[in-house]
Length: 400
Image 1: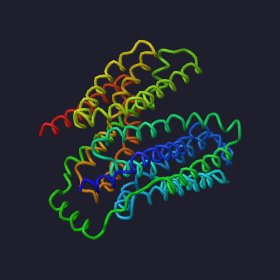
Image 2: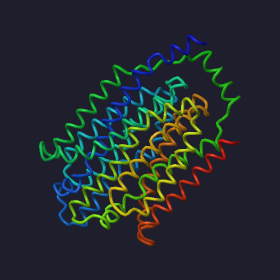
Image 3: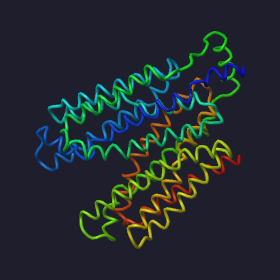
């Protein structure tokens, strides 16, 4: 038994770093076009400002829409046919889709190809499934924290590269370069990543017996899906109001834009720094404790954000909130991983990814609605109530 466990986990460190690099490059590809997307839509023949804004919004959201729909399917196929195969499919699919986006000649083609990128992609969620299932349980939180840092870094670096590369090499060439980088991730995944094949004969019957003894704890898994969704929700709820809110404390359009970017980057930087450390701590003292504490700390930090008197205070508070949130997604993934049978890990984590995409859409919608109806400060307080409720639900569940 001990020897088979050693064999099963012998490649987990190498696999982790391949997954981190692959996830980073594919997330960069998904977010890179944000700064220059309206310019590209204009190049594709759209001239009216309202139409440019409309096509840009549809094109940007298209990838995340299809990714949310297909994440459970790819997770289920990963359970059945192997996690490495799904990563190979995702990296090759993204490389082809990004290269084709650079050849679009009409806005509808851009939207169709962005939909295709989301449909074929899913490298980051596939990596989460592979790392969660092929890492020793005692190291799961730390490994998922490292992976979460790589994914978050991709979200930060993508828009930065999107602002820097097009003036240097051109918009179409930026897509082709990104496609080439993802193709390198495809090669690394194909030749460096090792998935230990599981014996099919005896293992299958023992797995079936194990599943019969340990059915999926659906109430717990659903709570984890909800928690993952609300984590992203809390982080994204201020997106629509941040520039206007900063404008109350800073003068000048350029200064407001710079400070708004700083506020958004501060939360991401906090998460990048804290995710591996909180993941490692969770492995030692328990994932439930870190998850519950992080949610409650996040709720508390949202209160002073509603009453700042200077923009720099929001930068500091968002950085601290990012640190509180950083290790929570690895904890959620680890709890799901430890409470479902091996043959259902991929499917359950796929649904978890879909729930996070729902948070990514519903957070800004909620912030925009509350900000428009009641003012900007109530956005922080309403999000605080949502996070405190989620923290209480997790605390109650962990006690039971």
